[in-house]
Length: 142
Image (cartoon, rainbow, N blue to C red; front, side, top):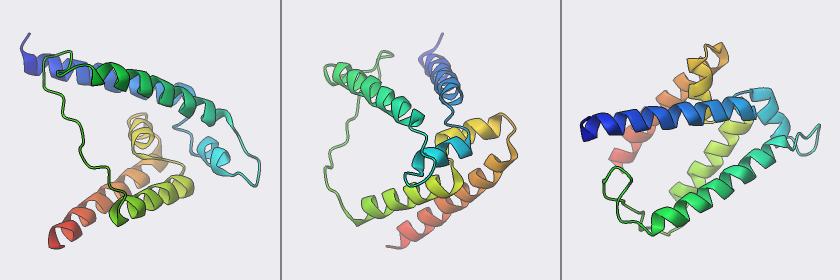
């Protein structure tokens, strides 16, 4: 198997595992997500456990990866170098959070829900793609 094919197979498997995890955790259900974000109403804390587990897994994975110079497939690891907290980062975070709260979707779960045939996800994914195109056009100008 070529390295390119192996990368594709690994990416597919990682995506399937990620998508199944999102479904099992309820992250693809907008009402569940909105109930988690509704701190003043009928708050559903169950997604906090999911996020806590994800942070734990991520910390362990990054600790292991930091000791390596290549991926398991032999590709070089490239780590971000910027540590700045600037306006684009803060504005992007606020827009992401507002979109998540209003729609009950973020990009990963929206794509999983779209793949499962949930119609509401199609509207979110379409709006997300339009936002990405607009961002790229505006960002190139500045």
